[in-house]
Image 1 (cartoon, helix red, strand yellow):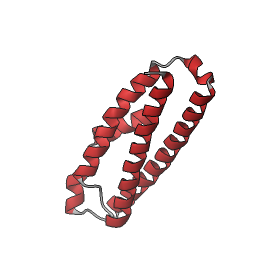
Image 2 (cartoon, helix red, strand yellow):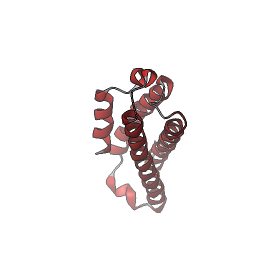
Image 3 (cartoon, rainbow, N blue to C red):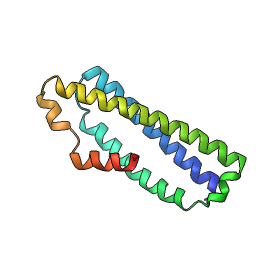
Length: 125
């Protein structure tokens, strides 16, 4: 796989993650509780794929970023990542707001584990 193909594959995954985070945002706004298990499983699967694409990106030589096509793709990917992070922050705020509003029996069963949240935050920092 060429450098550009590796970056494009990562960008496609970022688009899928963005869609997942958007779905989570819609769910939080509509239902005002923690997401259901299928959405959380989808998010976990995407995070596993993210580990794979990040490993492939680490193998790309730094000098290839001088290519204009690669630079353009990298910039699109950076932009998408910023959108994901912004939406994720909003989702965290919504989740916190809804959890402070009062415990709901269904929400307690569907909250992600603290280990998963720590793993997600570790990847983002």
